[in-house]
Length: 348
Ligand code: DAH
Image 1 (cartoon, rainbow, N blue to C red):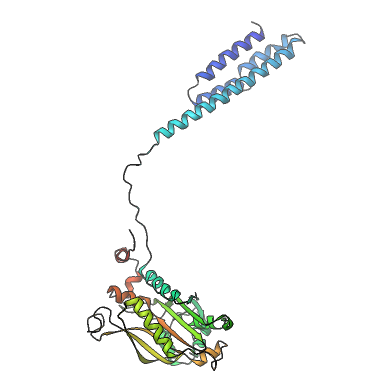
Image 2 (image 1 turned 30 degrees about the vertical axis):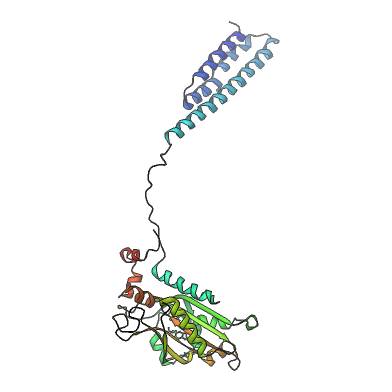
């Protein structure tokens, strides 16, 4: 058989094999065998040495043609097998979208986050900005700038964890007052801010004390701010938080950073003032500390206290949550016990 005829036969046979391939692995084997160095085409071409110089290039290019044809046939078959494999896989993977799904249990905000966001919304609605302070503070901002110099006895009430002699974890959110006042530009309007966040004290933990808890600081400074502004503002906020029928009362108190200072009580949201277990039968619930910003605190932050006055307050969201939901141990908020936390789920 002439070389030409051998090559023709080889081509016909190979095309048939390619056509008959049933899967990609088999096809790949055919490719390696046919076109590889030890394949039948190379084998046939060995016989070229017996050809005349005229015939040799003809057979050579004929062999190359066959190679490309086989190559193309293999590629085409490969595409066909791949497409078939894909549609087979797709058919196998169809899912029944009419089956009921498995419910995914979603997370939700911690109850304290919910309370703080609720309070933030109330103040934002009244034109306050929300300022974030630092949980790690300097003695300077936490105490000195709040009118609590080094030897001040009121420091005893707020012992905390010291990182160094001058750096501590803040005992209250009040340092944010100083940080905000020293930056405020009064040509742009009054300073009205709240600052929610974590605070820390070296307290012995019990049902009403935790070494970590939360506060929301409030501060308003402008020309002509009076105690009436403080009372009206807090009255409006307490009504939004505890119901339209609430009233508040102020009792004299003491904080180093306010003068005068007051303790603010809200009429009991449960009994309306008649007396019950929530208000310990007094009709009133102690809810926050407040006062007129001490002139020295204003001055230390670069504000002229003969021109500007302000009021400030500090509110405890943990206490608000305890009162509202009858939680009798503050430590529940920090134990991450799902059985406790799940009770405050807002959405399914
Ligand atoms: N910083 C006070 C505390 O932690 C709370 C407080 C009271 C803040 C009166 C105030 C305020 O801004 O006016 O006990």
